[in-house]
Length: 340
Length: 290
Image 1: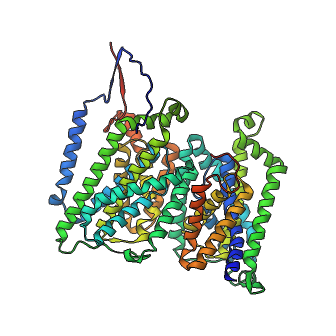
Image 2: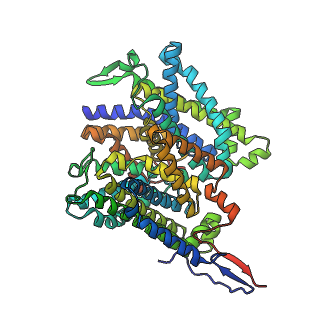
């Protein structure tokens, strides 16, 4: 299953192509240090802080997936809450049957990815805006179907079993590490995917779909792959959500609010860059923490900022940083160096 | 007998869905904008109607004389400013902007008017009254809404096919650069089309407020999704298709409700998904998919 049908390539001389202008080792080492420091957090900060961090991990994972969909594959999905909900329910179902919720997390992620296949078959028949609403209808349908099963809580949901005997402090720490692991794996997977053939094909589609098709890029397959990967990622985030809230409620896990958050975070941070959602998540968490006592206000402000960004700063905050510093933390493109 | 009743009620409520769907379809057909805030704007229209009725004490039914022009002006202004701004950038931007609008409107309504549901003209004879044919009770209101929908669709068809602005809209929808060269300011024409679409949204919002109850979340979890399902079932880009789609959706929901009251919405969506799977071009096919 190759993404590209082979075409004849002609080697050209006189220049070198590199991934980054700076040494990748340094940014790699920097990322590693950040991850190690983050991993030590449960030992150095209060559990209240790690709980907030888990929320940030969930938002970052979801936003990175939405970014992959909208920023790279041109698929604006407003139904990603379908996968958040499915992930949460997969964890719940496995936990009811005696699996540890933490062990259930990877299974839930893969399950959501598998579920993405038939859903893709349905929604891929529509384009752009109609694709968007179709994903929304799909998410509503999945929720209505799940609500019919009273053994998993029906319309009211149920608490997540499987935590009996867990020390509360240990549970918070485990949840935090699970969140960190999900986020790191998600970012790494996206980075590697975009560095490879898929990234090249997606860039070609973004620049000119017809030209990409005629050069042998398999557009449909590339988009399906992205949709499935986003399903896996949002499923993992949903599973994490279930574990961090210790309960699963259909109205909450299938809420459009998740898609609103992932979209706004991505648009504010910077659509089409891996760094964008990271920056967006930081902005989001600051806003949410300062405005948390004003109920719906943080979502209103976030929405207004996102509209402003979509109109006037299409590449988001990271675009503004990048324009000044020419910085890439995750180099997925190429630099052309002419030989002197 | 209850099945016949369900089908009749479904057909009638289909008119309401068509009222929402035709505006969505018009905006997509002309501007290629899928307005994700479509349903929320209908709720805004309903809330404006409630406000107008409370303040001016005009008869409930005449509130549309104020609300429709207000929404039409809002449509023109929104189109000329942020929607056109988004269109000039990309299709992606229009989706992000209208989705942002949707979330902002919904949470704004929630913040200022709480999550309480509100009805329009709840005591009126038109709203509560009904007549019976044999054993079947039919409300005056669903019939009135259905007739309104048919009149609106006839009016739209006349407007698009026989009036000067209608011709301009069709010309711009076909090829906006060519229309521009021939002297039509496509931005202004887009504004007019948006004004017309928002006018239908206003009627739909008032009708919904009388037929059921309005709440801040009604705009997305009911109106937008049902309108969209009606558009897809009927066939993209077809005006009368929206009525057919609305009717099919309405009947599916009422039959679902007959099986189990909690299955009303689900039954409608399953029919929508079945159409998407088996006949993605919709029941009335125009051949062209975009």
